[in-house]
Amino acid sequence: DAGITQSPRHKVTETGTPVTLRCHQTENHRYMYWYRQDPGHGLRLIHYSYGVKDTDKGEVSDGYSVSRSKTEDFLLTLESATSSQTSVYFCAIGEQGVRSYNEQFFGPGTRLTVL
Amino acid sequence: QKEVEQDPGPLSVPEGAIVSLNCTYSNSAFQYFMWYRQYSRKGPELLMYTYSSGNKEDGRFTAQVDKSSKYISLFIRDSQPSDSATYLCATPGTSYGKLTFGQGTILTVHP
Image (tube, rainbow over all chains, first blue to last red; front, top):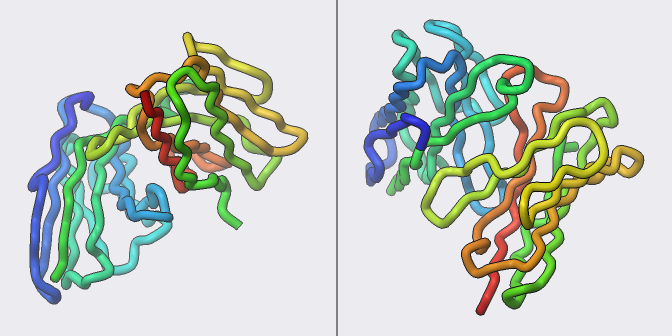
């Protein structure tokens, strides 16, 4: 998985609790992304980062926040989890270049269940 | 309108069949298109990459872009059970550093 790890890999939590998912890379790529994947919706971008402390919103950012204090780590936080945030979350990394900015490498995913 | 749309299927074919997977996109200015393959409970991985129009071939896989109809296709020849996966089309659209994905098509190749 191109030097990308996600933790935890599985998590069950209750509505209203805070949850933080971690993505760690060893590739020194500039770009990092958080997606969620749900049946019928494919992959949807939540937030992304184009450098340390540089982040921006994606398509489905409501209810999520992110932080990136180091090149290798990108954290996704659900401040108060809701059942609609039950999903599989994927982290991805990418690098800019003539064509390489288009290619993203994905982590193994985190399966989150909010009861 | 989403930048790229894909029929989610599912699609079930016998081993050895030719498979055609398709997406449509919204803006004729889009130039880069990708196909990702995702095995069950794994992250997606890049399968094919095309720029502008025409065909690109890699072994049993052919990616095709028809700009006149804003249609992208992935063909799999001599399909194998190991090709069973979800296939997602993607494009950066006109943005930089981001991709928009189709909904994904679930393909099953049965022996």
